[in-house]
Image 1 (cartoon, rainbow, N blue to C red):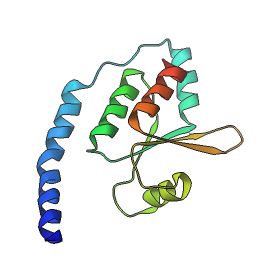
Image 2: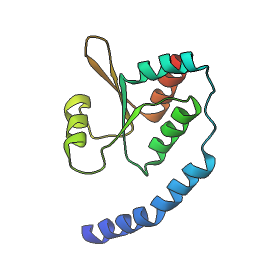
Image 3: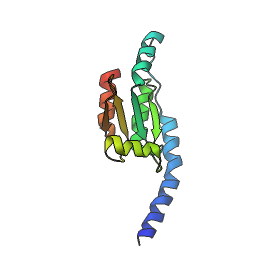
Length: 128
Protein backbone atom coordinates (compact mmCIF):
# COMPACT_ATOMS: atom_id res chain seq x y z
CA UNK A 1 0.00 0.00 0.00
CA UNK A 2 2.88 2.35 0.75
CA UNK A 3 4.24 1.89 -2.75
CA UNK A 4 0.87 2.89 -4.24
CA UNK A 5 0.89 6.13 -2.26
CA UNK A 6 4.52 6.76 -3.18
CA UNK A 7 3.78 6.27 -6.89
CA UNK A 8 0.69 8.47 -6.66
CA UNK A 9 2.52 11.39 -5.04
CA UNK A 10 5.54 11.04 -7.31
CA UNK A 11 3.22 11.20 -10.34
CA UNK A 12 1.44 14.19 -8.84
CA UNK A 13 4.75 16.02 -8.37
CA UNK A 14 5.75 15.26 -11.97
CA UNK A 15 2.45 16.67 -13.25
CA UNK A 16 2.40 19.74 -10.99
CA UNK A 17 6.09 20.75 -11.25
CA UNK A 18 5.86 22.34 -14.72
CA UNK A 19 2.65 24.13 -13.73
CA UNK A 20 4.28 25.59 -10.62
CA UNK A 21 7.29 26.80 -12.62
CA UNK A 22 5.03 28.29 -15.30
CA UNK A 23 2.99 30.06 -12.63
CA UNK A 24 6.20 31.47 -11.13
CA UNK A 25 7.40 32.74 -14.53
CA UNK A 26 4.07 34.37 -15.37
CA UNK A 27 3.49 36.02 -11.99
CA UNK A 28 7.03 37.20 -11.22
CA UNK A 29 6.96 40.88 -10.24
CA UNK A 30 9.36 43.50 -11.50
CA UNK A 31 12.16 44.30 -9.13
CA UNK A 32 12.72 47.48 -7.16
CA UNK A 33 14.95 49.88 -9.07
CA UNK A 34 17.74 51.35 -6.96
CA UNK A 35 20.56 53.63 -8.00
CA UNK A 36 23.71 51.61 -8.81
CA UNK A 37 25.49 52.55 -5.59
CA UNK A 38 22.55 51.51 -3.39
CA UNK A 39 22.12 48.24 -5.33
CA UNK A 40 25.82 47.55 -4.90
CA UNK A 41 25.46 47.89 -1.12
CA UNK A 42 22.41 45.59 -1.14
CA UNK A 43 24.31 43.03 -3.25
CA UNK A 44 27.19 43.14 -0.76
CA UNK A 45 24.79 42.48 2.14
CA UNK A 46 23.21 39.61 0.19
CA UNK A 47 26.55 37.78 0.08
CA UNK A 48 25.90 36.81 3.72
CA UNK A 49 22.58 35.16 2.81
CA UNK A 50 21.72 31.83 1.17
CA UNK A 51 18.30 30.31 0.50
CA UNK A 52 17.99 26.54 0.76
CA UNK A 53 15.07 25.58 -1.43
CA UNK A 54 13.37 23.12 -3.76
CA UNK A 55 12.76 24.40 -7.25
CA UNK A 56 9.06 23.46 -7.35
CA UNK A 57 8.10 24.00 -3.70
CA UNK A 58 5.24 26.57 -3.64
CA UNK A 59 6.57 28.15 -0.44
CA UNK A 60 10.03 28.49 -2.00
CA UNK A 61 8.43 30.07 -5.08
CA UNK A 62 6.77 32.59 -2.77
CA UNK A 63 10.13 33.55 -1.21
CA UNK A 64 11.89 33.74 -4.61
CA UNK A 65 9.13 36.05 -5.91
CA UNK A 66 9.70 38.38 -2.97
CA UNK A 67 13.46 38.26 -3.54
CA UNK A 68 12.89 39.34 -7.15
CA UNK A 69 10.46 42.06 -6.08
CA UNK A 70 13.11 43.44 -3.71
CA UNK A 71 15.91 42.95 -6.33
CA UNK A 72 17.96 40.73 -4.04
CA UNK A 73 20.78 38.59 -5.41
CA UNK A 74 20.72 35.86 -2.76
CA UNK A 75 22.41 32.53 -3.46
CA UNK A 76 19.90 29.76 -4.18
CA UNK A 77 20.92 26.30 -2.98
CA UNK A 78 18.85 23.33 -4.17
CA UNK A 79 18.41 20.91 -1.26
CA UNK A 80 16.11 18.52 -3.14
CA UNK A 81 18.38 15.48 -3.44
CA UNK A 82 20.52 13.67 -0.92
CA UNK A 83 23.74 15.56 -1.35
CA UNK A 84 26.14 17.95 0.32
CA UNK A 85 23.72 20.92 0.21
CA UNK A 86 20.97 18.97 1.96
CA UNK A 87 23.57 17.71 4.45
CA UNK A 88 24.66 21.28 5.20
CA UNK A 89 21.02 22.25 5.76
CA UNK A 90 20.45 19.39 8.21
CA UNK A 91 23.75 19.97 10.07
CA UNK A 92 23.34 23.74 10.29
CA UNK A 93 19.60 24.23 10.64
CA UNK A 94 18.73 20.95 12.27
CA UNK A 95 16.08 19.78 9.80
CA UNK A 96 15.61 19.20 6.08
CA UNK A 97 12.79 21.72 5.73
CA UNK A 98 12.62 24.36 3.01
CA UNK A 99 12.59 27.24 2.45
CA UNK A 100 15.37 28.06 4.88
CA UNK A 101 17.41 31.26 4.86
CA UNK A 102 20.95 31.03 6.22
CA UNK A 103 22.05 34.38 7.63
CA UNK A 104 25.77 34.67 8.32
CA UNK A 105 27.03 37.55 10.46
CA UNK A 106 30.42 39.29 10.27
CA UNK A 107 31.95 36.82 12.76
CA UNK A 108 30.89 33.85 10.61
CA UNK A 109 28.06 32.68 12.90
CA UNK A 110 25.00 31.41 11.07
CA UNK A 111 21.35 31.81 11.95
CA UNK A 112 18.84 29.54 10.17
CA UNK A 113 15.43 31.02 9.45
CA UNK A 114 12.62 28.67 8.44
CA UNK A 115 9.04 29.34 7.22
CA UNK A 116 8.35 31.40 4.12
CA UNK A 117 6.39 34.10 5.99
CA UNK A 118 9.24 34.63 8.49
CA UNK A 119 11.81 34.80 5.70
CA UNK A 120 9.72 37.31 3.73
CA UNK A 121 9.20 39.45 6.86
CA UNK A 122 12.95 39.41 7.50
CA UNK A 123 13.79 40.38 3.90
CA UNK A 124 11.21 43.19 3.89
CA UNK A 125 12.43 44.60 7.20
CA UNK A 126 16.06 44.51 6.13
CA UNK A 127 15.80 45.50 2.44
CA UNK A 128 12.27 46.86 1.93
